[in-house]
Length: 264
Image (cartoon, rainbow, N blue to C red; front, side, top):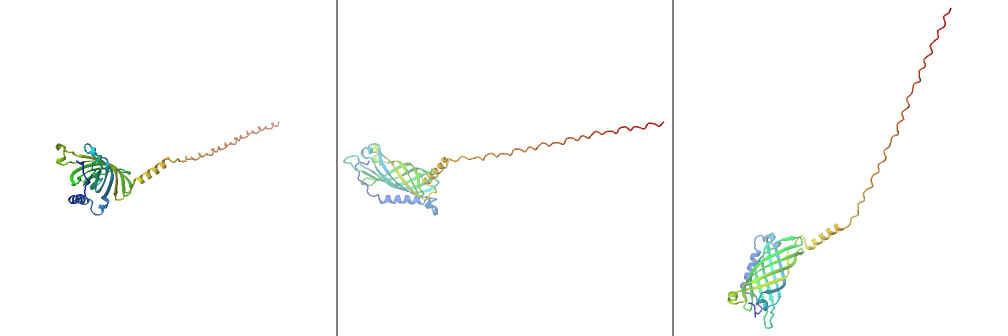
């Protein structure tokens, strides 16, 4: 399907107009108007390696490079839409072969839920038109992606992204007509996402985590408990010495009076 192709020239004017129309539709999506539009916009720049999967394409072309840009708008929560433009380059693995250069233009849907303060998961599904060959032949393509974007700065997320895609062959290139069939390809690289400022970044999270761990690991001086108060010994009152009972001296009865003897 791609053998003996020359690098593709610029896309057709109609294709450019279609891409611009898709981009305008994304930017005018509900919820992106007014002052909140800037906060909902994002620009993803992606680059990395690419390769074709399966014969006969993988027998003709080797691992090459890819680059793309995606301008998106967040509609509700982690869900959003975007318009894309990209290029795939596959060098030939044959001595007399010609490298393949394919342009990709289309739209896609994105789900980017934040799983922690470190960043967000990235799930994308996209489709559109691929343009390749000397005659700028246009074929449809579909692709999907998974990745993770770390919050490197308040306005920048960076992370790995892996994509799998398929360029759908024309009727004359289908396997039923002994053609090359669909071209399966993969992309692997880094995505740089520019967006409105976030409150927290991965650096802030790491600093907070380090500070918390240092606070936990720092040894604390043992608390010195105050010496128990020594209570004064109870004052024992000296036993009261009761005065000895005064024994009243026995009364001495007066001796009986001796009556005088009668006078005789």
